[in-house]
Amino acid sequence: MRAVRFQAARLGVAMAVAAAFACSSGEKKARAPEVVPVTVAKVEQRSVPVTLRANGTVESSNLVSVRPQVGGVILKVGFQEGADVKKGDLLFQIDPRPYQAALDSARQALARDQAKADAAQADLARYEKLVGKEFVTREAYDQKKADAASAQATLGSDRADVSVAQLNLAYCTVRAPESGRTGALLVHAGNLVKANDDNALVTIARIQPVRVSFSIPEAEIEALRAHQEALTTFVTPKLAKTPIEGKLSFINNAVDTATGTLLLKAEFPNADERLWPGEFVEVRLELGEDPNAVTVPVAAVQTGQEGTFVFVVQGDTVAQRPVKLERQTTALAVIADGLKVGETVVTDGQLRLVSGTKISVTAAGPESASAAGAATP
Image 1 (cartoon, rainbow, N blue to C red):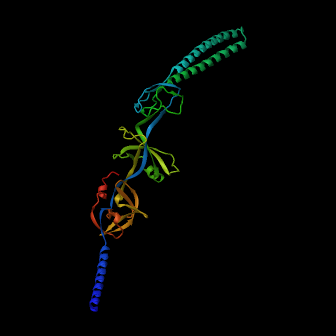
Image 2 (image 1 turned 90 degrees about the vertical axis):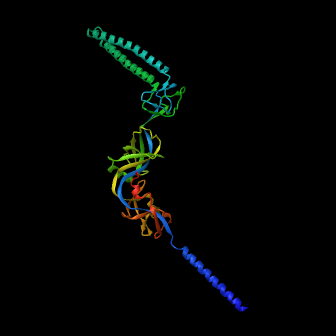
Image 3 (image 1 turned 180 degrees about the vertical axis):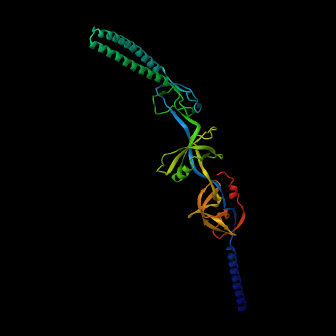
């Protein structure tokens, strides 16, 4: 009986040892290095445009706020809000009757004082003859001379009053001071307006051409000035794909000390009205070409706690290598230091990689440097 129990115990120990060995073998198999599939691309030397990028805002090339210069009731509105108007078109008609009456009164006063001035001049002419023959005193002659001069001064004041009255009457007809697109109508017919009111009647925006204002970091000013004569400006509206070409038209005379940026403006013909005042756009300044840039696809460059890096292929493994990124376009990253032409970098699959990870190259990625070279920067 004891022999049977002893044999059973030996059998249990043997089974436990076998199970432990099997588990140990399984763990060793689980720890076997994993091969990660990746796509790669070559480091290439190529000509790359040197560009500056910024966000900008479209502005009207001329924005006019139309305000009344005389007060009165608006009798007529001569345009549809949102319509295009030309310089000189009728916008508003203010009741002219009070100003016509003022003009008539000024003209009557001028006529009256003209008659008095003529009489004073005639008296002066007579006294001038009489004083020579000593028929009147010199004092009497001097008085007539002063009366004639006073009458002429009164005439001058009357003429000024007539001019002001004529001007006020003309101001009753409000015409477009500039060609452009009208905004919302802020005061309708029948309303009473005040002269030189702070509130505009309507605004007129010129949208052909337009300007785009944007800012660049002060560190880029030297490059901007070096290429100022030859640079081209492109803007791309949000959600649009085709850029619009324009010219740099304004460089501010000082850097904004609060932001460390320099304000610039570019002008665009906008014949097709693709750009609209107030719209946000992406701005690209092309400063020239870098003919010997070391490039990789943008997807190859990763960012970590210690800066930018790439995974360089070394046989069937990879090594993480820090790089200095100089700039990038839509498809290409220009590397200032850290890579040599001809090396191979990983462009997809980096999330599963560390230095020493075994890899299998599936294919060259569609964003390889060769394909990216045809892309618009």
